[in-house]
Amino acid sequence: MIRNHPSQNPNASATSSSFSSPSSNSDSRHRNHATTQPNWNRISNRPQRVPLEELVATTQSIVGTCPFMCPEKERSQRERLRDLAVFERLDGNPMKSSSSLAVKKFCRTISVKEVHASDIRPLSVLEDTLDYLMKLLDSSDRSFLVLHDFIFDRTRSIRQDLSMQIINNDQVICMYEKMVRFHVTSNHKLRRCEDDTTILSSIHHLNMEQLTKCLASLYNLYDINRTSDSVFDNEAEFRSLYVLLHLETHSHSTGESLSSWFSRLSSSIICSKEMCFARRVLRFFRMGNFWRFFHTVASEATNLQLCIIEPYIMEVRALAVACINSSGYKLHPYPLTLLSKILMIEELNLESFCNACGLHTSQDDMGNKVLPTKQTGFSHPKGGFQCNVFQWLELVENPQNIRNGAARGCKFHKAQVGIKCRMNTSPTIDFTKQSSWQ
Image (cartoon, rainbow, N blue to C red; front, side):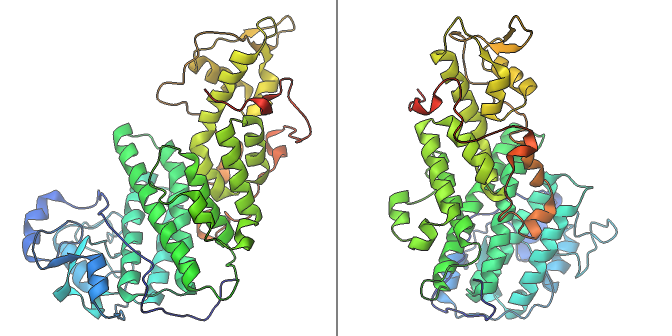
């Protein structure tokens, strides 16, 4: 369980930061004035500046004394430079902010001489700052891209202050869990933003990179604060996310191999329902057993887990359609009604999806839509195919789920999409024997 008493380990730091986030809030017209002031968002070439990791390693533990979300010195400087995000402007004035609006920006490198306790926020202020940022997700007058850009940068600044003070207690675990939830749900929401695909791809990459770093720090915090064989309330679910990230078989950002990683987990975590679910989903994904993949996800996935799995659902659907097309009887077209239940997609969307895969549909003598098999024109949809992955994902759109941690234990019910998914019911074709996706 999460314990209430704080504890610190002065010899270990669970946080790390390594690159600057893109910020749409800085005004390039005033960058030339930053040479005489600390630059809050840009890498400096001055030799006296050192990376944060080296600074933490060579500096004694600092106890922050800044009572505000943003140090007054930084706020005054950014007011002069018109470097205020839209959420920090007092009455929309780009040159005026307040202690209740301005939030400290992330700084890639910090000069040792510029590190003062008055510039560092203590734990209580950092907790209030994170809660403030999570409440901004309720904002309806700004696009998610604008929200994400602001919260992405300011949460990195929170992690930076935690790292400089070497705070590794139970309260920090709760904070990291909130930040992981933000990055996970952003993974889902960024895929629904309408913008330049190149820009979105870059933002998505940065978000996923910070997600893996947050998870690594969170896992370290779990280990540092563990007593005997205790397990934290949300640990099993957050550990399972690491397994689900391996659905991307060509990604090397997940770090060490799963076998090595599992060897360091306690039996209680490995046997937890969240971890068992993640391992089954990964196994079904790699086997090509799409029928059990979909029904396992539908019956057991939590909100957070589904956000990680979502990018691969359309891929599995495409491979399932390819399997049915190649293995079916040419004289027996496959009913779209049955196929839509297996793949958990509305029949109208399924027909469009088949067409996007280069397959045509037709009607049988009863007027029902069917998919003729043995077609030779199959191809994966160009540029992806967007439609509702599951109707349950509307739960992710509620920002309150992120703030309150409702992702844990938020199970999805098959009745919500009006289908029956009994595991002892087999499709007409035994898809479970299809072990190859080639």
